[in-house]
Length: 403
Image (cartoon, rainbow, N blue to C red; front, side, top):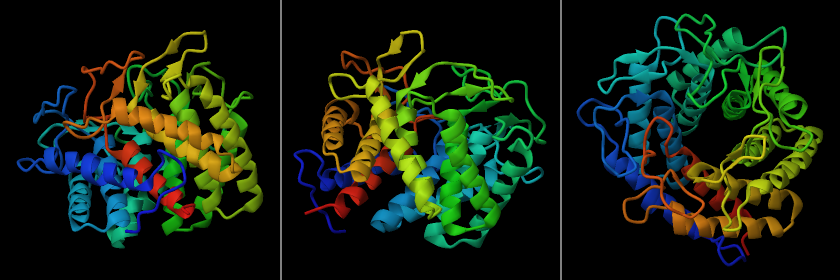
C-alpha cells in the first residue's frame, strides 16, 4: 500500500493505517474469536474481561463481517478474509430465519435464538455487511441474501401510505408495540437512526446491484432526510410517529456529523449531479451544526436533550464519525478550517479514546477525561465498525489529496 501524507501536522494517513492494522483489528482477531461455539464472543467488558457465555447480538456480528470485508478490500491480508468468511457463515447459519426471512436480534452463546424480533435496523446492517461480502468475494449466495433482505425491508417495513420505514416486527413480520432499539430510546414508529442505516445499506447495495427500484428508494431516502429529518438548524430530528408527528427535540451530535458524510456518499453513488450539489451544501451545514457539541478539548460531546441539558461524555463512535465528517466537509469546500477540527479531534482520540495497552478504543470518557469502565470494550453495541471505517475512509480521502 502506498502511504502518503497530507500537509497537516496531525492528519497523516500512515497513522490511521497503523491504528487500524496494529491496534483495532488485532483486538478482534486475537480476543473475540469463539473457537468453542463458533463465530465470535458476545462481550468483553470495560475492564477487558471476556464474558464467554454472553449473548451474541446481530449488530455486533454483522458489523464484524462488514469490518473484515472492508479491511480485506483495503489491505488484502488473508487473515481478514478468513475472519469475513467466519462471520458470514455464522450469520447465515444461526442469525438467518430460514422460515420467515430476515435476521434475528439476539442469540445465546451457543447460537440458539433468544430474541427473534425483526428490527429493521438489524436487517439493514445484515444487508450492508452482505453487500460488502459480495463485493470482496463475488459470492452469489451473498448477493441473493442481499436481494432477499432488500425485498423484506420494502415489503414489510416501507410505509406506502405515509412514506418512510417502520421500525420493528415480530418473527412473522407483524408490527410490534415496542419499536425501541434500546431502553434509552423513545418508542417511536419511525426514527432517524434506522433510516440512516437503511440509506447506508442501500448505498452499498446499489454499487453491486444497480436495480431501478433500489435506485428510486435510495433517492427517496435522501429526500426524506432533506425534507423530514434535517431540521431548519441542520441538526437531525430523531423520533417520529407513523404519521410523521415529531416526538422529540433532542440532538445527537455524532449522528449529525455521521449523517453529513453518509448522505453525501449516497447522493454520489446515484450519479445525479444536481442532487449531489444539493446534498453537499446541506452536509456542510450539518457539520457546522454539529460543532455546537464540540468541546474545547477537540472532542464531540454525546447529545443534548433539547431543553438545555447536554451529555458531556465523549463516546468513541462520534469521534470516529467526526474525523470523516470534517474531512468530507473540507473535500467539499476546500476550507482548511475543517482539517483543524479533525486534527484536534484526532489528538483527543489518540490521548483519551485509544486503549494503547489493551487494544481497541474505550467506550467513552467523561468531560474530565476519566474512562467509563462499566461500558463494554466489545459487545452488542461496541463493535469495530465506526473506528475501522473511519481509519479506512481517512487513508483513502487523505491519500487522494497528498502532496
